[in-house]
Amino acid sequence: MNIFDVNWIAVVAAALCGFMVGGLWYGPIMGKKWMGAVGLTEDQIKSGNNGALYGGAFAFSLLASWTLAHTFATYGNELSVSVKILTAFGVAIGFILPALGTNYLFQMKFKKLFFIDAMYWILFYLAMGTVHALIS
Image (cartoon, rainbow, N blue to C red; front, side, top):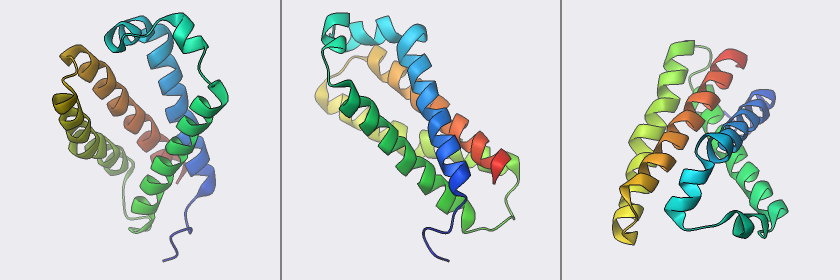
């Protein structure tokens, strides 16, 4: 199988969905708590290079989405919707959270920030897994 032989519509749609989860999570849902946990103000956030920030974040979403799509494509049409969603959840729980947690331990970050970011990644991968499961 060619590594680029994936459903590109699903890749882009899932990346967009994950990106929107981030906008909601770090915006109206947990934005103020997250800013407090990382020690940033709204003015500091607004002064950032939004093109680079959001463009980079979307590029990483595309990479994550393509990786899920490639993982699913290696099994052809054998995986059910629920298996795809649970696989995406497993990626968040089994790979992302331990990496994030290890970094936060050594950076001496607060538990509050870990739980904010960990929940985001769980929701991110659940959203992307669901899109891939329904479109692929």
